[in-house]
Amino acid sequence: MERSLELANMTRVQQFILLGLSARLDIRDALFAVFLTLYLLTLLENTLIIYLVCSHSELHKPMYFFLGNLSCLEMCYVSVTMPSLLMGLWNGFYHISFIACMTQLFFFIVLVGTECILLASMAYDRYVAICHPLHYPLLMRPQVCLGLALSSWLGGLLVSMVKTTCIATLSYCGPNVLNHFFCDVSPLLNLSCTHVALTELVDFISAIVILWGCFLVTMASYVAIGRTVLCMPSTTARYKAFSTCASHLIVVGIFYSVTIFIYARPKRIEAMDLNKMLSVIYTVVTPLCNPVIYCLRNKEVQAAFYKTMHWS
Image 1 (cartoon, helix red, strand yellow):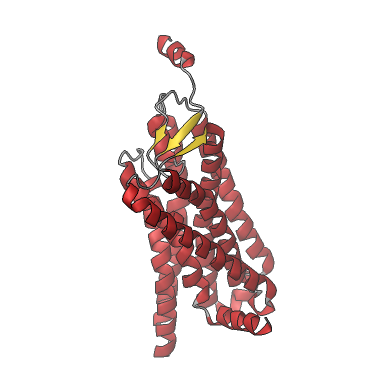
Image 2 (cartoon, helix red, strand yellow; image 1 turned 135 degrees about the horizontal axis):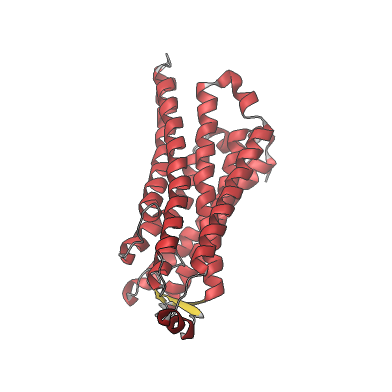
């Protein structure tokens, strides 16, 4: 009882200080230029893909519908985390209000959850296309594609509402310094002055359901694809299919392995420097690489791009 009264009398933290990616003055300017370039390039790539998918009827297919959703998600993704990263590199640290921090956390979790489900949906789409081509028009009809896309966004939204509510209702009495470049789960839990066991349990269970569930669906789809590809009589067809699936698996593997390591843990991460470095991979690297891996190497997308350039 005395402990509760003591906490109630403490001043609630009104703002947090993000230490940013690096405090070294000799490299901050260079890092700012690099990450600003990567940010603009990511926006350009994904805007181009959305435009191509929307403006070319030959790309009005389930696969490109999901890729358009992924590009939209990636643009939102980098726009949630990158501004605070850039501000931290520009100023050395970044002040963010409690409400703005929770808002950033909410949208970040929405997008992480949505991407996990969307990548699993895309893997299922490829599984049906390669393993059951005759049933593909029925199994991946527009209503099914729309349902999978909506489920991805609504699933991410639901998970984020639960997790953000749990974290926002914790007490933060000071210190208010986050050793990160955006408001993430583990840094916030480390600053809470109340018992966080229940919040950690909710975070862990939701991460297990979303991350591990989607990861297993994705891997099962690619294993089935691999078995089908091995039975193809043409060596050229096998090589082409394997090269495409391998590049997809690299991106998917990096994203899931890093997010599972950070979020699907029963305890929060104490080593924040490691957390920051790993966070760069799925907040900067994967949004930059996904358009190249999934779309810009695709011959149909390339043909649509050349047609657009010819029109202009």
